[in-house]
Image (cartoon, rainbow, N blue to C red):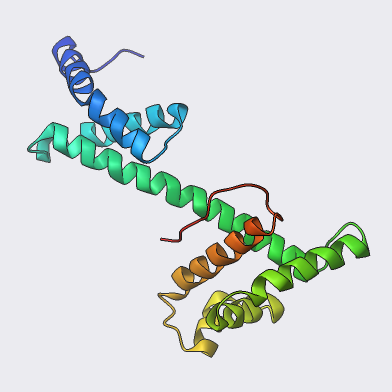
Length: 180
């Protein structure tokens, strides 16, 4: 497939990359983005730039701002994957899907201990969601939350639970998770 870019445009893009490279490295270091993912994020930023270039007044500040936003989105998506994994583990534990009754009992006991250390708001929400099988929207209605904010509250509660499980050694070594 032939390139539709002119040689002058390619040189201009390479020049922009060279100028922003030191600041981009600082951004990636600040957000602790792995090198392979950093290159992907940079490419994503340039693809968006190519689509919006006619409306962009200052290329370099726009690209650096876009990189920062891409880094935030990168970590948010990683946190969500972890929360979803914890969410799945909770559902399996509540359903007692452990390979043996003893292992299921141990996991359930560890989970109950971790949940007991959470705020009453989180305990109530998790009990409705996993203990009683309510959907997030049903739990929001019962607890008086707005349906638009229940997913954020649920994410915070799962983050707190994940941190407790990590602290107890149940999920292995990780740095504390911040929601939002």
